[in-house]
Image (cartoon, rainbow, N blue to C red; front, side):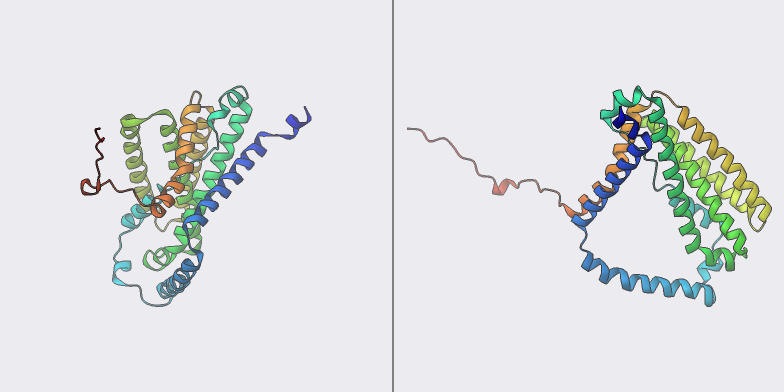
Length: 271
């Protein structure tokens, strides 16, 4: 009884999150030569810092001044599609978690929080990298740029949870039939809403309030969904192995098919 009281659903989620992180780092160490990467990354970072500084201090290049706002927003929307939602459920949990709805909701809630923080952080980085364009090409203030980072982060979180709800319910071609219109619709809304908000602080704040309400709504809908345990396990496994598969695909060469010229046939000897 004491062990059961100490072992909470939050501790289960935290333990599995740490195990996932250690597993990814172990796989990364197997395929990455850090000595080589240091020699590649340091010059690359120095060049990137110099190029980024020049966007603030020197006249903007022609491609930057002529880049339409909808095009930049569309490129950012493509970046939003990266990443997903991990709630860290496993197939062996089927009896335990189905008999304890509170544990399942806790894992799901923590997974949604984690996904939102990751997407907001990603969009803050993207907005910071494109800040010279927002400031100098589109003439937005520092406050408006910060609000745009929050706006993009909320949209990325909303999109990730919405697509996750589709992935855990559907498979095969039915999934794509529903996901493609969702991606197109959210992208269309993002591009037009961003253009509408351009240069108007109150419009950006209004847009953030609306998307936050939508985000809270889809989050509650996800928590209330039932009968998706098998889909949750499937999508968790797919997401957790995605980085591992990518790294191992670069480290392990595909086996070659045997050539007929090198094939020997042995015939049994007759007495």
